[in-house]
Image 1 (cartoon, rainbow, N blue to C red):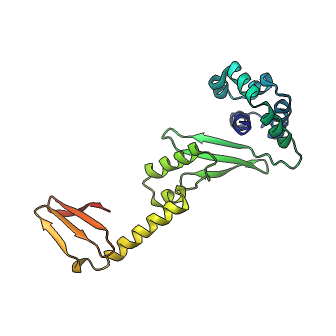
Image 2 (cartoon, helix red, strand yellow; image 1 turned 90 degrees about the vertical axis):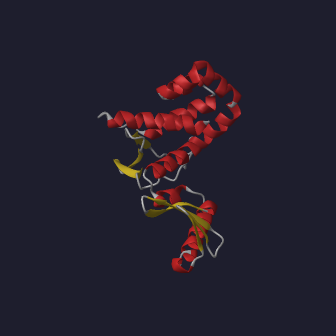
Image 3 (cartoon, helix red, strand yellow; image 1 turned 60 degrees about the vertical axis):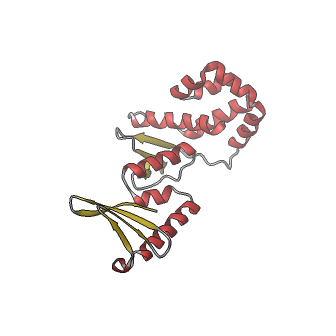
Length: 207
């Protein structure tokens, strides 16, 4: 619970900065949140939420969340207030086509950490789904591979490697033609179906 609230405060500060105003120090917001969390001060926490989060939870909802997680908040607030805690400010810019660019502050300047072909390394399931959408929208195989788990990526790579090897000598394959349709089973077990469109053979499916 602590992380979304803190991220909402940081994002709000960054959006103010993008509007041309002075950039607030995220450490001050983190310290204020840590103190409010340790006190279980739902009013103070509500005041630090973004407008979107306030609309989502409401005053009573925030009060209930703080009450239900009072012990956890106190523990997390204590950890957040530790001098060894690193505070990182980020901002997400959403373009009209749905693509996102993620910015981080380094040495007082905004730096791009993720945009288009640069994946952010999703920190939430929603971010991972956003990266998947972006990869599919761009029809980018490279971007798609970057958002898949290591196991799924390895499985796809194995399948593609088997297809490449099976298609190494296409003229020697046993291709069964039936009118405008054709099928072939590759040495590795994969099958490919083809269809003739306006005199040109095209791959219809492969598995």
